[in-house]
Image (cartoon, rainbow, N blue to C red; front, top):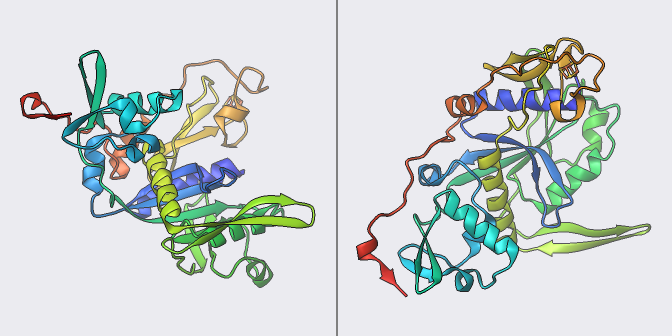
Length: 322
Ligand code: SF4
């Protein structure tokens, strides 16, 4: 099974065996040069407050702005900018019900519908998948980046390969190792991870050139922001990010209790629709896509809430304005 099939089967397994939110392919560095295969977000004490706001990712710019609860603020002042990105973040926050807006005197004012719950997520586990350890590629360097930055509470390598002592010796000692069989959805813990401390300073590679590596110290406050951004992204995104192709050969295959995996009978394996399917595939047979309600399935199996009631306040007469 290729990496995509391994990855979605492991996400299905996590959904069954943990109380959190698994998600795939998320930025996990301050410079955008590291993407983690899977992140599993555990709920924190304010989790329900977060689910009540929106099912989607709340933009980081909106959370970081000085838009607050109660008092209306002119949006440009609250964001200290009127750039296109900021406008987009503001509109997205309004669209998902995190902000509400009013217009007075030709100006637009915004405020939060609910205070952003700072402790909605707890620990974050980062999982790098390498089904076949005989072609490790950049694995060792990637895991060293994760350990030295310390964005995750734990880092895991997941593989299908039989893991030898030589394999273990090549990996950073802090990295836990799981052996996962995507066919049977069975996981074996080969080595427990050593917990990392996301509240400590981290070290990130900023530039690499022949014979030279520049590093940057990442302070805890920046790491906290990166963790929040990653958790938000995971909450909005989940792992069923693919659409089933319009092909007679595909079916929704069950794994770990969810019929969510795009299995191709022509290729006899799970396929990545975005990269493998289309009319130029020799096995393609035009047909209706199978009906798979991924969001209902996600809500059934995780604490994610698809349609929160919303917190928009309707007490305009009680506003503090200014
Ligand atoms: S398009 Fe090709 S790879 Fe995709 S489901 Fe159809 S036969 Fe399989």
